[in-house]
Length: 447
Ligand SMILES: Cc1cc2nc3c(=O)[nH]c(=O)nc-3n(C[C@H](O)[C@H](O)[C@H](O)COP(=O)(O)OP(=O)(O)OC[C@H]3O[C@@H](n4cnc5c(N)ncnc54)[C@H](O)[C@@H]3O)c2cc1C
Image 1 (cartoon, rainbow, N blue to C red):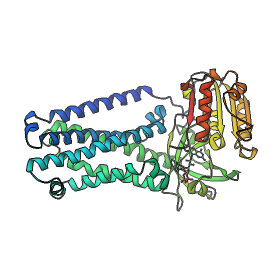
Image 2: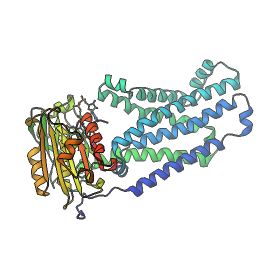
Image 3: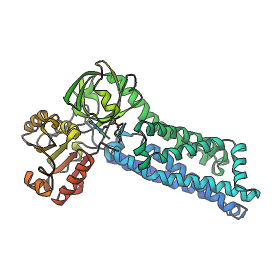
Image 4: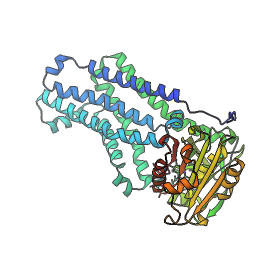
């Protein structure tokens, strides 16, 4: 294999990700120490002491978890290249209920603690805290916003609300988190008279805000301004699929690899407020790049009517579906439907000397998008491209079929992209024929 020295070349930085993991552990340990150290045994014996201690410790751990959740989806490029946005989003979702429970236990715990200390009723005490303690009202509003965002992420809710509504609700979580900050410093006993603890906590918040501002605002604004992307043309590939050619400045400097995606925001009336992920379907040249999109809902539908000259804002690149994941120099690339887009760019970007086998799966010949280009690049690598067309019952992709298509399949790295159900069933067949899990690489088009 050759060493790539092009400006866009990068390698996954496992060392930086390990460092980030250690920092996360150290931060958690310091937070716990902070929480425990601020609880004196005498205060535990006073009325409401235990409830207050539980409230304070859950507040610290819950807030720490909340900041970690924000960082997980802050699009840190070096982390995304190793772990992948889909996995980071899953972790973010996995932590969320624990964080919320901790923050609610904090709210109830401290209210109960104060109520016991002052011999008041719970509801009366809550109202008193809300109306007389600085920052408490905003913090409560913040917690409600976080709870609404979490509820909107449950499967049943996500099925019933539009993606854009869900996204807008999530934007409010930043407000929710910000609203809770001031009451922590003004009322948190761990911080009031402890400058070191206060410094640590402020630094943690500043770091989180800095990471979000850098990766989610500054970098995308800088890249979009520098590369100055505009739509050059829209070509129909198929009744439901278009390729959008884009022009821009020095696109060869964009640190993107075949198989990766960007978040695309087309700056036109009715579209500028939404960013959608699309994989590149060809490697960028110095001045052009391309995406290929299937019509699915309102955003993808509007792409069919894009005017040349439309400005485009990008975030990214993201994704781990790249040749860096190869553990052998033999690959099997499997694409179905519009899932061929990252396969096409990955194929173009494979290192020289790879043994390449490509399988494209479609229900009909019309559905074979970009097939000619894919066959061309496969031949360029000296490989084989197989086009499997027909209904599933007649053209299965089970273990027997895979063995027949590629007798050496177990020795290959497999890159797989297509509808979720297709990927699940092919991945299971691949394991049946002996491909180890770590050599099966996916790109899912749904998070
Ligand atoms: C990593 C990745 C790469 C992708 N690459 C391609 C590609 O190269 N070509 C292609 O045709 N499609 C691709 N997709 C799918 C594409 O993003 C969705 O089809 C598109 O966003 C649907 O939007 P819509 O408004 O047309 O449809 P809607 O009906 O609004 O959405 C349909 C479904 O798409 C998902 N979706 C919608 N908006 C977003 C968003 N902003 N972010 C994440 N998911 C969203 C949701 O699961 C939603 O239920 C990719 C998706 C991902 C996650």
